[in-house]
Image (cartoon, rainbow, N blue to C red; front, top):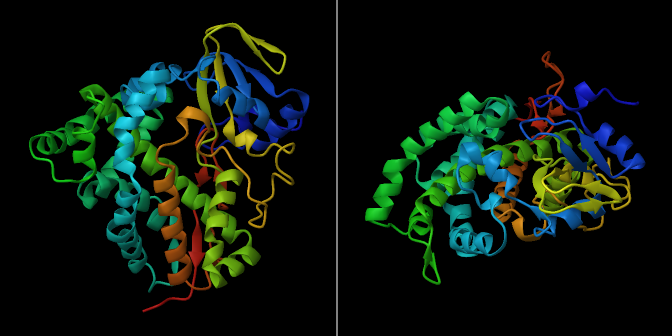
Length: 393
């Protein structure tokens, strides 16, 4: 065996790609003993079967998410199937309409990013995870919901507690309850007097006479803050890491900002911040000839699918000249991520402003700390990004 499973699957520091690449050559379906609260089951690690599972909600249900992360988030859109899911999704989708995205870009996203860069541009050096990427998306999400920016650090801590609830339930439940009690006055205020913002849209959403039940409203907010903040901050760091470790590409993108969308899409394929989604078999079935009993857990390893050599040439290379192709960073099928357009908007604004305002950006050659690396099993991002650049007054 060419890898150490303990190293590959370490939740916080894992490096799973070698394991997935080796095992995919043997069989696209792995049998797992159970981890992270999911129990024993199967993992799908190739593109074709990952796509077929995600596009077949009748056979592979999302309801497992209610039992798993739903303990900490509540009634979730990612835990529903069929008509129930479509109704819920239609109710919250209006809050992400294009006109709202355009408004956020100009009035919230770019001002927040510029403010963060204001704090470091004159210094000539920074640690970008600490100073920028870990702060930016959570501040955006707080701004969208109407929460004061100075509460963003607290929300980031709650988000981390909820996301890691399956491996630390006490912290997960504590974060769930604390976030709910903090948000309650905001929800009640918008319910009494809507002000035309995102939270007002959610509280008063109605489609064909259907409204968002309270527990689903809370579930969506508890999903939005961890998902919108935690995942985007990690993938923003992954994009910066990719550019810093490929200085030739960095130089090209600094000279031509029209390449930024290609950087974003290749980062999402090469190092997505979330590597897997969970499903449960509703009936006896099979995947790639492997029998799957009804009730079995099926982990769809989207990160592995994005590195499947039968679907992508040179899949382990970061190449922004790669011909456009679909990736699974946001999933596929009926549960494709509702916030993907917001995530792309944040990534585009963030990269554009960083590259414009921190000229000659590069890793700090004098840094004596741990080597920067993208790490993690289910959630991946860089541990640190120490950089230097030409200071600007």
